[in-house]
Image 1: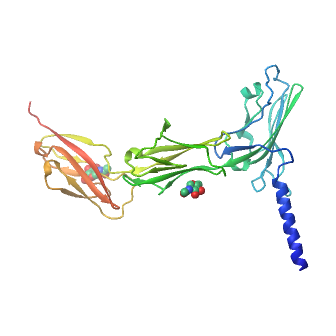
Image 2: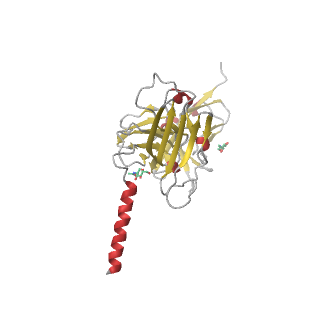
Image 3: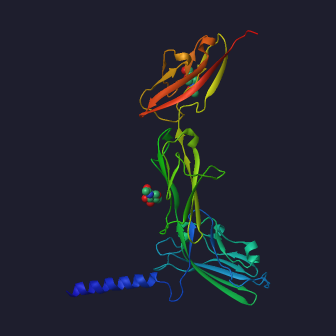
Length: 339
Ligand SMILES: *[C@@H]1O[C@H](CO)[C@@H](O)[C@H](O)[C@H]1NC(C)=O
Ligand SMILES: *[C@@H]1O[C@H](CO)[C@@H](O)[C@H](O)[C@H]1NC(C)=O
């Protein structure tokens, strides 16, 4: 009985202690600043009072300190619990960087300092940067103290199903950031030009998902999303979608002289491991009989001997693979020597 009672007290104290550690200081809500792992992060610190009449240079002193989040890799875990250490100190004589491992990633911006912005920049932010930050600033005869809690989240675009897709299959892209609240808005874009993706029969936007019901080789390339949160924080990430199709992907015209032999190309993209032996069915122009070409490591090139005008026209190469039909078209143009 006694043991049980003690255990309960111990549990109670554990809870109390946990609550005490978690709770912010009375009356002082520590503002939370979010960062994306691997992206630059700004830890803001500037006076709320306008600074027009202040002479900032030379007399400024800035000290940023970090108390790593318990459980994250503190620079020197000595004794229990996370320890506060100086990340960076700007003394009147010049810049003196704090200790490793932050060093080269940690910056104060000179242009910011001149405007009275003492923000600390992490380029890029890492998971171990999470925790509480304190800044002590002196400029002229004024002082400023800043305090914030940095939280570092991971952003990802995941595809379901993952990996390369065959043309005409579907895919769902999931844009996520490890933050408890939902983003206020989600935007999808394409390519380096960040062209916005709109709802269409080909693109369905649902929350932080993008559903592509039927991909084509035109969908190969970069897809990106940005999540905007209520506090103004924006996460932006990209995903490289690979859509496989028979090559040539766009209709090709092959020119040849009358009487010569010619090869009409048709092949699976290189690097696609195909276990079974495949055969392509070539449909010639003007409804001739289909021509079968056994694939040689995904190569279904059609060879024609001594071609004449009768063979000119558009050929279609069809391959059945994993329940879908892939096709490519090649046009043969025969040039005669007659003037
Ligand atoms: C979307 O991705 C996130 C992060 O990988 C994951 O936690 C979440 O379960 C995914 N959602 C769905 C519906 O797959
Ligand atoms: C495909 O096969 C043809 C002949 O069958 C050959 O000439 C051509 O070089 C091959 N293409 C590739 C990319 O291997």
